[in-house]
Structures are given as structure tokens and as C-alpha cells.
Length: 132
Image (cartoon, rainbow, N blue to C red; front, side):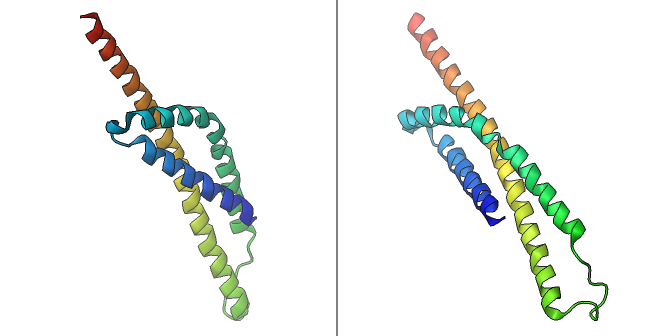
């Protein structure tokens, strides 16, 4: 089960990198245009992050619902209690990773849309200036 969390971490890191590259200053125009086109082409494949995150959320919920409960200190050994606490901490960490991946995808989509609109508007301005 650890492989899917590694994959989600890499996807979130790639999304964060693309968002940072898209927000570069306009002085790096040739690089920015290339990043915009690459990001536009990767938005559809990265959409698969949404159902993948929902699946992982269901996995966390299932683990939470089926975990054995320790009602008192006598019903669980210290090692079992430590294992359950460690599992709860991992679930919280994984939940934050899911939220970050979904938020980064949304930000990537929004920033890409704004960058494309900015590019189109700047092309219109250049065309209008050339007509005059």
C-alpha cells in the first residue's frame, strides 16, 4: 500500500513544480510559453488524481472503521496501543497529502487557465497595435 502514497507524493510534487513554473515572471517568455503548452497537455492525465484520491480516502475510512478499539489499558498491550497510534498518525498524514494533491490540481488548472487567457490577450493587443 505504500507505493500508491509514493505515486501521489510524486504527482503532488510535479503539480507544485508546474504551478511554480507557470507563475514565473513574464521576462522569461520563451520558457513560459513552453511550460504553458506542456501543462495544458498534462491537465487531462493529471485529472486521474481526483478518483485516485477518492479511492485512497475510502481506504483510510475503511481502515478507520475496521480498526480494533482499545477500550481500556488492560484490553490492549502497549505494543498494540503504539501500533494503533502510529496508524492514526499515518492516516492523518495521508489525509493531508490527499488534500494537498487535490488543492494543487485545482490551482494548476486555475493558473493554467489564467496564463492561457493572458497569452491570448497579449496576442490580441499585439495584433491591434499592428493594425494601427
